Amino acid sequence: MKFFLTAGPMENPCGPDASGLKIRRFMKTFSIHTLGCKVNQYESRQIHQFLQAHGLSVSPPGQPADIVVINSCCVTSRASSKSRQAVRRFRRLNPSATVILAGCLAAGVSQELGNLDDTVRIVADKAELPKELEAIFSTAGKHNSIKPAKPDKIKKKNEIHIESGFSASQPAMPEILTDYAGQCRAFLKIQDGCDAFCSYCIIPQIRRNVCNRDVKSVIQEAKNLVGAGHR
Image 1 (cartoon, rainbow, N blue to C red):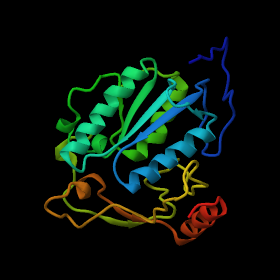
Image 2 (cartoon, rainbow, N blue to C red):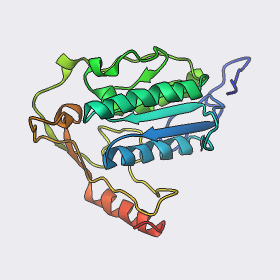
Image 3 (cartoon, one colour):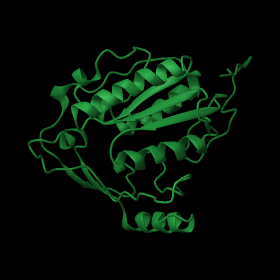
């Protein structure tokens, strides 16, 4: 990882990108590890596209990365355990990297997090992930831990929102995906959240707000994916 130092004030040396972020960094590579459902796989692809748009490239297999994102799952105790193991494994394999824990485990009950390394950045609210990445770029990878949401902050009732392109919940993530590089099938998310509150399922507590995408953005994304050769 290289650091960019200036002798005086310098505004946005890398220039603004499509999402309006101003970046001071020479971070080169990233790695994303996804656990859980197809929704997580879709959101990992959003993160992938976001980081590529900021000039980073995927770290080759077996090579260290500057940024490691673990998109976690906590739908079962085993999924939570695997997510914690992934954090520890990738921290061990990437000792100088900035490791981010995102996804459902980060948004869930704090006791599920176990005794994770305090250098791991925990992003409980996925809407804050773009801001967290911006902070990493601007500070060149200083480790600042973000605490997850407390259990008593989790609402018991959902509010249903219809959003255009998820702009409210994901203000800086790509609204429309262009492809799923490296795989034949692509996933297209048209709704997020659940308000069923089944007695055995934690998802309504993790993904609280039911949110539908704008029809036009869904159609455009489907066209993009078909055009990229996906099924």
